[in-house]
Length: 335
Image 1 (cartoon, one colour):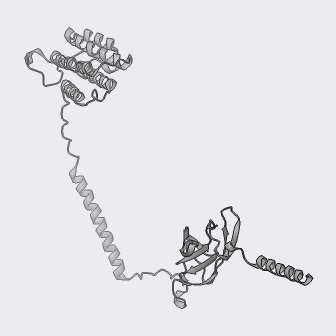
Image 2 (cartoon, rainbow, N blue to C red):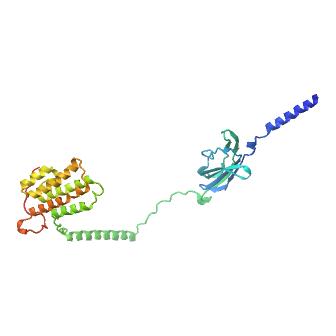
């Protein structure tokens, strides 16, 4: 009986030791493969490193953020996985593009790859293979590849022919300069500029500006204030350029007083008052008339321009519509 108990105890101890020595199931399924596309390059060439790790489901490879492969430099790095393989196993992969600028036998070092479970614990730690890479010069070795001293500058011998060539070249340059000087002197003074075209009559400019304002589409786009600002500027510019009153710097009241002192007709002043006061309400009192009402100001503005042009045209030119600028002397209104 005692012998049987001893045998049972001994068997239990052997099994426990075997279980303790055996690797855990997860660790037994972890495997890494490392490959390098070439082990002989010229300095600055690219190498491609591939690391493939097989691991059990529910685990992953904790890839490093930057590969510790000095003196090699990492140009590109791509990570893939985990992806399911045949037989219920999983694999993850890393591809890196490397380069090196040292000559001779250069070692690509091994680096560690922890495999962690779903709870973050390390299941196993793998190590990639190390490689020895032969890095050769870009140019062939030998005497032809050695650095040579800079050669001294070549000297040009001064022969009689060389001196004569330089003298002839200098004479040709001097002759060309003298010819240009004589040609400029013969031209004399520059021809008188062509006479400038006479300025267009102010009433024509104003009527054209009013037509452009009508076609601008400001009212259709709801830009009521901009419409009234431009209309006021057109009319004021005509009063200043065509009627001789500094309208651009005056208030509406001052403009009307200046025209009254200059003897402008009453109907012209009344039409002008209507246009300028309507524009002032929009510009300064924030009035917002509708599109139709705003558009009606174009006609009185045209009548102001036409009446002003007739008033400034001498009576002996007849009742025809004026086509030239103001002719009669006129008085500037005081500001």
